[in-house]
Length: 376
Image: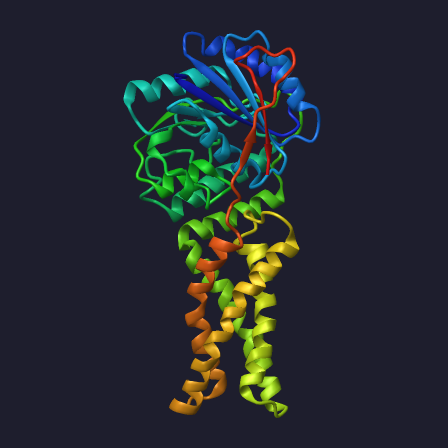
């Protein structure tokens, strides 16, 4: 049985493959290791990985994701699920995470028995010198501080919760829960489970080749993740759904003011609110879980949300039976429907598809070095 799996998410990192595998092979000598590239590349990186894997003392696999769902975090989570070893080290493909530290992370996990070992840039002996420019260093430092300020108890023992370089015991983590969080996998691990952690200092190095994937969009995703983790997905969905109350009530008010019966006005307002809330689900709530085609999701969301019409009898009861104003009755029933809609949307519209793995023959490759492709 393999002792260690090294998961390496990659995107157009072909120029780094040979150097990374050379250094890693030396570092893990004596440890039964498999290297698992989770590749989202649009260039020839997968073929480079296959070529460079031949003749190695360690097994090297490449999972090329035809649909890079969830971006970097999605690749890491899929890698953790595909790993065959009980201990997994997650390591970047650009050599900013020194391959030599991989063995240190593994041995620390074995020696101490902890659930997670974090390679930290910000503990004594570590450095983030390899970050490009003062602005990126500032963003890295403060993103970690913001996370620790929002979760002071859960992150008190971790100096670098934003690190992408860590070892984890697979049997200590419920990956189905972590997969709902997305983006920063270590942060999600530390917040979703009471894991015993340890830290090792490391020097964040300069990129060997290629370009950084960090950008403004990634920063927005991070802020959204913090909101999700701090408030919970149900509350965020409630806020998104509650925002649909305003256009709904506006339509009811305008149409009833024009003389339309309040039930017909409510039915029309529901369609407006469904469109509004679908946009919120796509752009805010489930933006990392948009599997398949947009129109497929739109139809499923529409059909699911039509169940909202079932609350109209309750609106009638509140108006005709209790004497409430039609706008107030609409508002009360809308708020009660939000929780049910979140559960149904998460389960039937934005649920992750089952990944199907195909293992084709790779001409010229030795048996322990297959190329895996993913259709999804």
